[in-house]
Length: 220
Length: 417
Image (cartoon, rainbow over all chains, first blue to last red; front, side, top):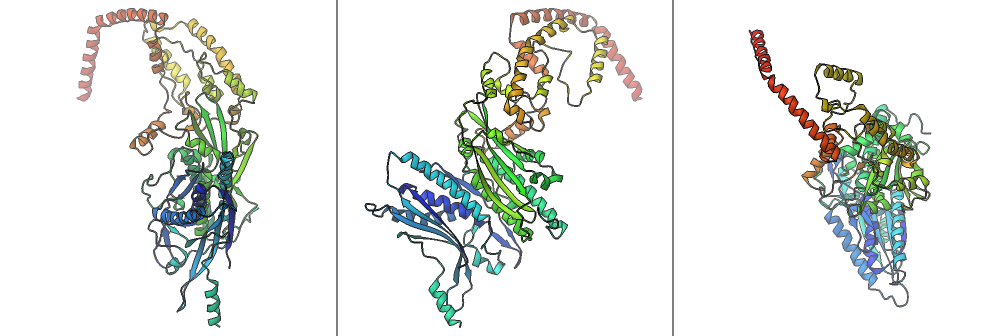
């Protein structure tokens, strides 16, 4: 798998999970989304403008930027909320609850009958979350820790994203759907998928190894 | 050093220069916008025209563009960015205390180049990503949170764009530096970075600063703000005494820009010799001198403070300082309260553009005449007495004037025929 994988390990309170993950994922998605493409012919295209908005967090003293797209915001929020709910529902009596959620960018390869198109990830961002106990005395210092951690992560994200490796080339019109998610009306992110896992192991990837194995065998 | 033949043809290089120029313009816009203290809400921006640079909806405030243009000459884009372009963000309290918060830098580092990047559309696309990184990082430094509070608190954020050596000392002793992305191009790495102050207490630990604080009294006509910001040049211009009579015919207006002083003085002299001026309007020279001397001590004090103040030494007055009103600080105010999404904003910008028009001396004198010290009241009475005498003389000459006008009309008829 020729992909870049980036992992963050963060400790936070239960109520901060949604915002910490959203902050990281939206920062990445802001960089990894462009305006809608309009193809003039097979090879030439024009790109529409991306607007962005500031999001103030409720449980952290932090503001992040995300693309102005309701639909994209909703779909990301839904995945993160599901993950957060499950993570916070875990039994915390023996050890602090842990879970991981990943934002995976992939491109599709054209399918050969009878198989589905193959998905090949090229960049995976994983956030490992550990829930800290609600300790009221240490609340403030912990809060500051989360803020500082997020600041570092944001700087790190910008550093990584400006190294342009593994990013798919700009596609021609017929291949646009293999690289970009063209289903949104106001924004065009690279194809992405959010996965999560509550055992502490990395979330499963979209790249289906077994299917690839079979296909390779058949093509022999 | 980047190779000389970094681009295969000249048009690519020109295009690269153009992109870099707009990257700088948009970068400054992003930084300044983020320090206005406004949260960018959904649907808060007008519909874009889809012709935005780098496909990003970044504002294009003319004032900010002008500031960038002044620091970044169009014929030396790459040279200027090689020697660094800076945006300085500072805060000023109501009391006039001033502190530099952060210093954003755009530079072109020739030692880190990437000759494999040839396609100009890729350069353009990646510059867009670099700008996104800049937008993201502007939200995480302490100055962002401070600027968001400026609406409720009694301080204002200012910015300044300049090129060349960074004035890092103004940030104090504890400074943190963050890089907001780097793009390697055939001509070197384009890089945005920010250095920011980590100690925010306005406790004056420098003697110069405490000098300024000592002056914080209303005894002097100049408030500490002016003490900090006024340049020497301006100070010299101000050496006119303040205690004028109600109307000063000798100096009806302040001298216009580029006016030839000698010619104007000559015209005035000619005028005054030909036309008699009522006695009361001539001010005794002694009075001028004495009042000028009275002002002197304050000014000297101010001057010493100025030469010691770190800000005045390290901050040359902003461009167009010649047209600035004396009461205005050198850096521009960033926001118009209560006028965020309103047509009034346009009006406010218009107002701001013309705010710096030359100040009429007459207005000052009128204002002063309103403040009624016993002396001025007496002077006024004297003046009105003289005026009535003047009026009497003119009324007696009404016939003469009528004849003059009749004659003028006749000559006009003659020439008409």
